[in-house]
Image 1 (cartoon, rainbow, N blue to C red):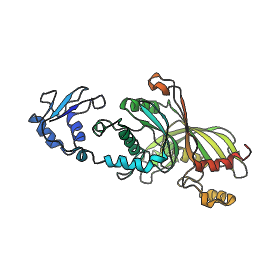
Image 2: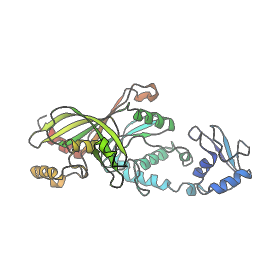
Image 3: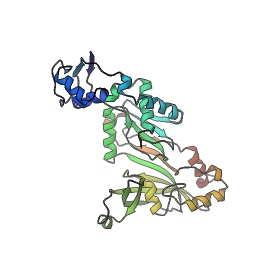
Image 4: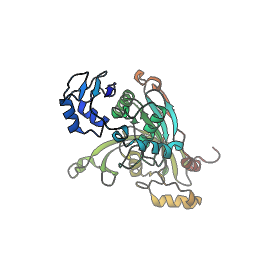
Length: 341
């Protein structure tokens, strides 16, 4: 006999859905049969498949259940992600509910395909190593990232350790109460702060966005359109190279938003393979004789997060989390900043 006690993370789930997730080898048909025949009970009673679980419920399975290896074959991915990414990821902040990390460029925030490894797998692997989650608890709640960064954008990434922490952080992001700041090295001589508000249309097949005239496009397009809003200010400039270091505040979180909007405004991010100016990148590299040092990603970095005053955020209330630039961006930042500053 196997006994399961329902915790807060599993409360509210349908009984059959919970069991099929917990024991993938059972199958819905087998679960329904065992429930009808009292091979599975809740609080020692016969219970329908659509019953909504409550915290403290005790499920007893008198039927045979698959081994844990069968129930969650994905566990090996977490160990693999830890081995692959572990030494490259540093923790900026953590409490009982969330962890904020410095995501390196080149790592996905979330899977794009089933075979991918991402920060999500790394994070669950870390939680498993620490004993903060178990294979069983992952059935009801899987720790995961709360915000996302493009694969080749680096910087602050928030991970939810608990369901309650993930929900609070998700609400903070959705309600635009979290202030997100990025550093971007761009082509062009930016002399004054500005804001950009555009309509973006996403091409799902190409995984790219473009700015559109909202009124006209609605007559011809069925794609997803979203308002994108950001502000930027110049921090320093290199007049000889026509490069500016910008601080960008992101007010909405659209796909490729900063990259697409800055490019459309005439300030493409250095070395951006999708929205950048390749001719300008080549001229810059020739000028500095640094072809071998060309980064293979856009020079965009999430440098700081400013959290609102909110008691529910606990120690993060009113706090600012900063993240230093990675080495490749620091190299080009010196070109912008100048050796004497």
